Length: 440
Image (cartoon, rainbow, N blue to C red; front, side, top):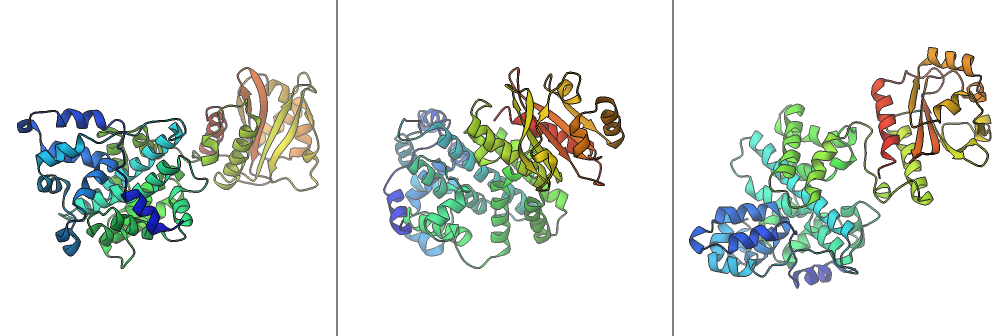
């Protein structure tokens, strides 16, 4: 697809705003002119990037703005237009609606999610610049709000969720960096040229670096704030500002809370703070968002495989086994595993649920069990399960997976022979992960 033509097509249309914004906008515009506050309208625009886009594209073609590359504040923009022009324009704006064959509910939720990330990024850059004592923050605030917009319009236009990370998917469609997509979008709408100075390709000033880090930090929160790959951005920002990492991180926390609590316009505005509340080991995987229940075998298989990879890669368990329950034969059969050698007996050995065995007692109800080395030895001596003969002397954790009142399978994890003990925190994350398989 040709980027210029696509951006021109976007610019030829007037785009709707978020559903929760429209009633308040109509209420403000319905007041007597003496009672309409530009500050109220400005705050409303800043709470919904789509409404902000609708406003800024009116003044974006101004020769003065194109010439000096400034970004007027939202309140200045409203005053430049005048109250009558503003209320006249906003009285005709529409809200996004879920319409069969045009826009599905999951796409609308994803749009709210990405606009919520933009608002979080705006609060982050505002906080970081304030730490530095910068008096001018609104240009970066506005730039952060608009950053994800082309990608959101891309989703809205196609009514589909991309298989890859959204910004990457958009960039690959046009075979260029996302900053080039932004640059062309700003020119085509048009929006104030100063936005290109902050968001487009070009030399990186300290403010631009902080802005990019704020955007990347907000956009990647769902990956898990405990991950070192996410923390690198916060650490880089702290170094740029000569601030402590803790102070830099707390700005992110306050930004996520502000997005969820200060005029949230969509359910997605609560996602950043939800992501921050996730404990180490919790995560969101795109393929798992579609998993509805254990009754869909294909989707459940996908979720289990993702969970196994997560347990091995992020929680560092050396061996991860998933046994599927076969009700006809009253056996557990190994379906998925990581860490077993190719010729290991357990790869082919079904585990019979014999009366009085450890596995029979375990699978009688939804439950989990953590067996340190000494406890594992006692279990092996007491129950004589064939499983204990082949799993080795490792400390382990095990948990059943139920669908309603029916057993679906069993998860097993350990750190291998002579591996480190399973900490209470790791055990908690393991239990939490398996539990959440029931709720995706």
